[in-house]
Amino acid sequence: MKSIITASLALVLALSANTAVAGNTNMDSSYISVDIAPICSQQGQITLSFTNVSGQDLLVDPYYMDKSKFDPIYAGLSLYTVIEGPSLNITYKTKPNYEEFDWYVLAAGATVEHTVDFRDYSTKTFDETVQYVPLFSGNNIDIITTQEGKKISLFMNTDDAHESDIFGPECWK
Image (cartoon, rainbow, N blue to C red; front, side, top):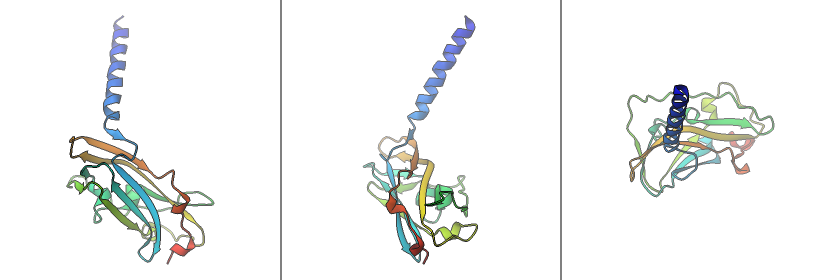
């Protein structure tokens, strides 16, 4: 009988803990939306944009927003060939130093846009004759809401990306 009570208590605690964690995570775009757009310029192939769609100011992990700290590969950007599909061998330049940082204030409606040149992160030469599709999978983008004072971890991706994200040989200027 004691083991049944112990097991029941453990189950209740596990479900309670799961509910608490779920309340602090968000998997939709109700706070920040992410967008990828080809630009095909000398500065890079794409832009990766984060827009505050929450209607309130947000405090956001600066390693996603602050241009001086942002590393697109560490943040979760990857690149695939359209035909073959394998991820290309790209690597981040710097790891975040989470011991020292201030939250980035992203005003309601504001957008932060990063230009990405994948050649800066490649470990080998790209085949510039094929088409590529960039994907973003940013896990644990921490934010704090300014109205409720709630800390939330965002799980965002562009897996449902449109064909307009695809870029080809013309982008390697």
